[in-house]
Length: 149
Image 1: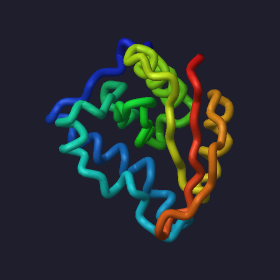
Image 2: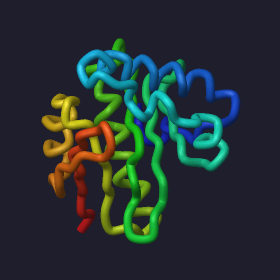
Image 3: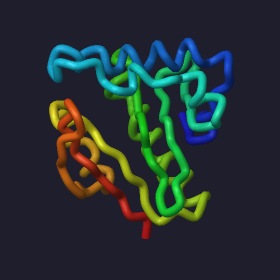
């Protein structure tokens, strides 16, 4: 699979976007004691706004990104559990890097729940550094950035 096989999601993709996000985040409900924010997102609105990119046929993974003034915000990265370990997440992260560069943005920002410790092992391996950890309502979040220089 190459980055060319990552495409902008369309309205017909909304049910599979929801299914992939739910499958990816379902295991965290018990661990964090809350439904993860991505599971409650308005997937149709994100797709309509051109923020969702999917990969695979059938879809095995996706990212939700938002262009901001000085960075690309990586809102969600989700990979179906049966596709873990096959490089889908790695390809999606490379796509996000390329997207930020194409938009002329100098960095990518994201956050993850502190209880999602797998993510805290993955992101630094891909050039992300911790900016801060803070509580936001019921969520304990670790904020990251990756500078694209």
